[in-house]
Image (spheres, rainbow, N blue to C red):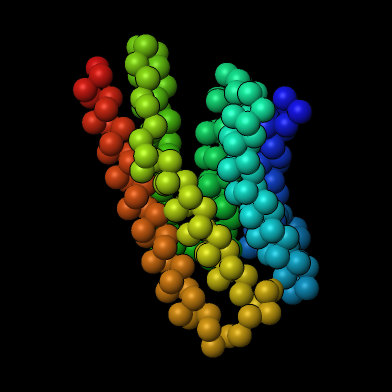
Length: 200
């Protein structure tokens, strides 16, 4: 049981890869193979399901680690990496499906912040400075996951058998959530930058 939290984190990494590959294949990124409509619909549904399961493991691995007294250095390192891999997999998969302006800019801002903060943490850690996670940063991942989940539903709208007339308003809502997630992501990035400047 002590290894269960890390196993869930590893599962999140594996599911992230599946999410990206499923969406990329539907988007025509797999050389020499373009799935038919039925296969595309199945990949979109399974890709979304994998994303949801992976997102749920983000909550349960940390909760179980604390509950079972199985908090470990390896888990503390792997968990944020798995979070970023899942976010990147969903973003890149969505861009492979449909690179609309409403999606590209907030997605690029999210990716930029994630890599920039990771690099910042590397630099500060090398100088013995830790950057504590802010409360807003804890919510940031949740905002990102909800927004990306909404975008995945909109992208695969016909595959879920949803009414065509409702797709346009749903897309507006999903785009608004993604822009909100991007704004929160940038704010938390700025918070980390301020922390780093003070500490250094």
